[in-house]
Image (cartoon, rainbow, N blue to C red):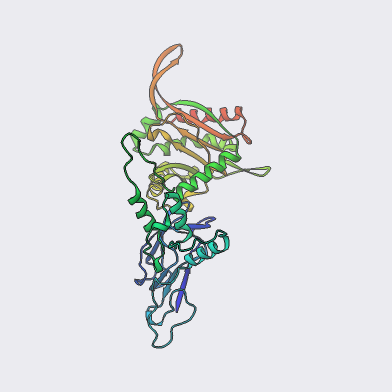
Length: 397
């Protein structure tokens, strides 16, 4: 018999995922718990293991397709392929029947796409048009400016595939005439980038952001970092915790007319990755000895950069910090994650003149930017909190 393996919910609130790469081809054998397919959620790239051993009769969706939780991800036959069920068929093969034919029937994802297209399309079919393509491929052709009627299809029954469209787009690209400049290029955003865009837009659209600025003498904290060989973010968290404890409005979330004060300190770290900005979370920062805190900062940061972090490690922060100084930044106007009330960004510490006791001295000053929810925090409270953070940094032992 054949088993329909459906996309499981592997994270908090997961609705859909994008197929990145199939790790086992149709017709090949797969072992129990062997990585079957790599998917990308709005949090991370994850390998999905096979729930059973057998033959992969059919992929539920092609690479690049987005499928919803609960949709068929793959069809897996029994160890004895000849006793299985043909992909996409509900009838068992009888004695003497041939082995299931792999890859010739529409995948469950293709069937759903075709059904959606049939239900929503109202445009008349162009007589004699040779183009047969799924909605995803038609959208890609439109985005790339490719005329589907001119593209020979290499898919089943002559269907135009995503690869056919991309090849046509590459072939159509030509250098511009002398003196006319370069042509434009359209690149589809990754799922992670689209998720970042949606969440940033929602936070900015629904929440009144206010940003205030300050600077801390970073000599002590930088010296401590050098002595310990620890990540700066761990020292910043340690310096920040007393300010968060004293000002609970910043370690909170607004729920309707209620302000929910968090009594745990799960600190989010904004991490710059090749695929975009993600927030890795250090859980229970307030109870960790510094050595453990430093190790956890390094661990979750590396997991975020390599896209191996779990959904739980990339969500649920109560407050967020962003070390933009690591990429040469100074002051900024950071947008805090939806569901929190504030974010701190730390810029690159630079030596500059300061006036102390009427004398001009050189000091290594770290720019700090605090963005907060103005529905919860007024300007005076914002300044008091920032002053407490600066004091914590400058009093680093």
